[in-house]
Length: 328
Image (cartoon, rainbow, N blue to C red; front, top):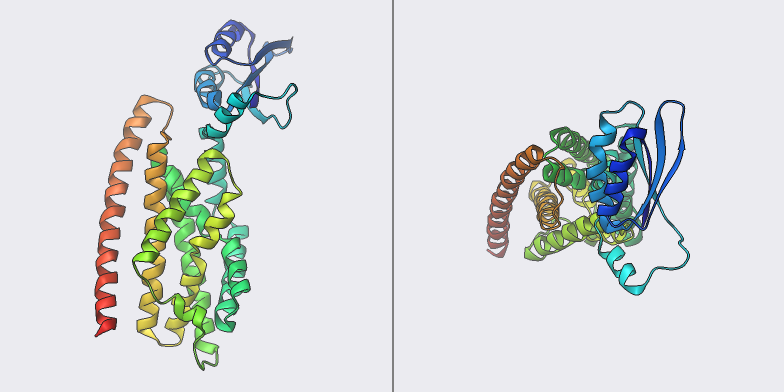
């Protein structure tokens, strides 16, 4: 359940009351007028009606200076909701604006993001070199590269080219920084035998494809339903940093065949996560508000799904050829 705090033109109060009725709001109240001619209103709506209410309210606040809508989560409500209402709340999608705000934040290419990439790369490299699973999981949970992938998928679903560009830039820079640091580590590390965890990131098979697709779908579902706790499991299941670190270190060590395996695993993870996210967003009906934006988003979604499917087929062929070569 969400509380919508609305500040709009007092003349629109009747229209907003009608919106509250159409969205079957639990409660609607008119508060006092403010000197600017605006009126404060409150609307209590269930999670599955939040996006509908925001879509109807948007034209009334976007063209009025100083008008706004605040979406406030309701932590406790007395009397408590019925079992049927709780099930409906659990099944509700997160509001599009909330999804966008979260994705836009995770796609920013700023100092904090770069620091996280550097730190997680160092943690992953140490864990891989020392064959320490716990340390590697620590790098997985930091997971700075997962956010840009999710943001790119949402940007495609909404047809938002700015979000897609920002996410793609963050992902590209993150991978390059991680690989660059790892190359330096590979050049200076006194190599002896390779650890099992390091070698595991140079092997890619059909199980890697299935795991990445399932994890990407789980990540998108956790994002759309607001179950952020699921993301921790996704971060561990489809980690992008360990393969990137292995790829760089193997290049630094001059082990080109092992580097190719790690690079292939990284590419499979990125492609599968993006493809799964796009399919989940499509099935969940994540789309822009206006019809012309929906048309553009639908076109871009079809293009990107086709591109990712073709890319995955090419990677699958590469996996098959690599496995055949290793068997000979």
